Image 1 (cartoon, rainbow, N blue to C red):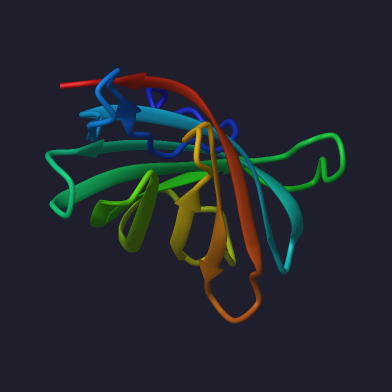
Image 2 (image 1 turned 30 degrees about the horizontal axis):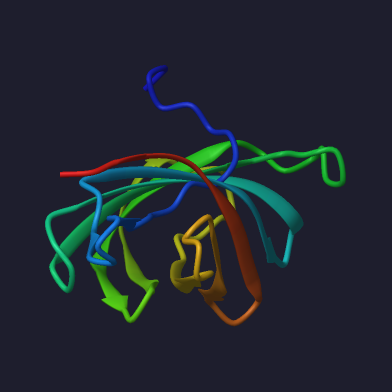
Length: 143
C-alpha cells in the first residue's frame, strides 16, 4: 500500500488534433481541490479510459493542504465513463473500492466537465455533505 500515495486530484483530458478531431487519452492526471464536510481537501485524480463514451476507471487520492492540514490521507478507486461533448470532456465516476480508508470517511462519486482548452475540470462531488471539485490537468497520454 506504500505505492498508493495521496496527493492532490487528477482527472481526465481529451487531446485535440490540428484537424479539430479530438481523441480521449488512455491516461490522464489531474490535480486540485474538492470541498466536503472536512473542508477544502487536496485531490489527485488519475483516469484511464478506452474511448469516448466508453468505460473509465479512476484513482482518487486525497489529503491535507495549506488551508486544511488536519485532513488524513486516503485513496479509493472509481468506475464510470467519459465522453466528448463538442470540444469539452465530461467525466462521470462512481465509487468502486477503497485503497486506504481513514476512519469516518466515505467514498464519493463525481461529475465534471472540462473547459474548452481541456486544461481544467470543474464539477460536483456526488455526496450530500460535499459540493465542488476543481482540478487542472497535470499529464495526459493519447492513444
